Amino acid sequence: MTKNLLLDIAILLTLAVLGVVAYKLAPLLQPKTDIVLPLSRCNLNQQACVATLPDGSQMEFSIEPRPIPALRPLQLQVSFRGGAARRVEVDLAGTDMKMGYNRPLLAAQAGGNARFSGEASLPVCITGSMEWEATVLVDDGKALVAVPFRFVSGN
Image (cartoon, rainbow, N blue to C red; front, side, top):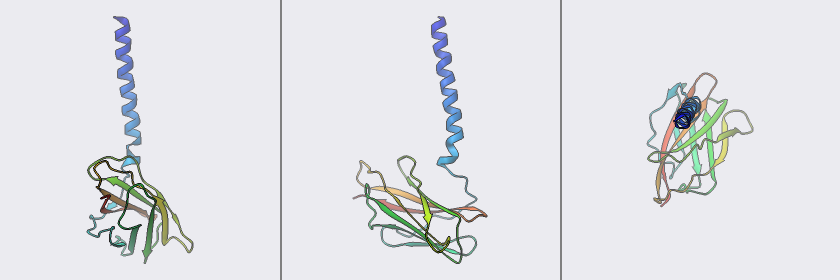
C-alpha cells in the first residue's frame, strides 16, 4: 500500500509541476498585446495588405509566393509609412487546428526601422487546405499592436 501511495503522490506532484510550467510558458503562446486591431478582410493570397495603426501610420504586410503554399519557404515583408517599429514578429496559427508555435522575428532592413523581412514556412495539413491567421505583432516602443489577417493555404 505504501508503494501505491508513493506512486500516486509522484503522479500528482508531476501534474502540479507541469501545470506551473504551462502557466509560466503561456505568455509565449499568446503575447500580451496592448491593442488588437480588427481582423482584416484583405486576401493575402492575392495581394499585399495594408492596415492603419492607432498612431495613424500605415503598415503593409505581404507573404510570397502567392497563392501561399504549405511546406515551402515563405518571404514575409512588413513596411511602414508615416511610422516605424522597434520589433516585428508574425504569429502564424491555424484557425481550426493547433499546428505548434510558429512566430518568426523579422529583421530590420537597411535604411531604418520602416522595413522588416524574414522567412517562415507552414506545416502541411492532412486535410489538404487550411485556414491560417497571420498576426503581425508590432512593437513601436510605446505599445504592442496585433494586426490579424486570415488566409487559406493548400489545395
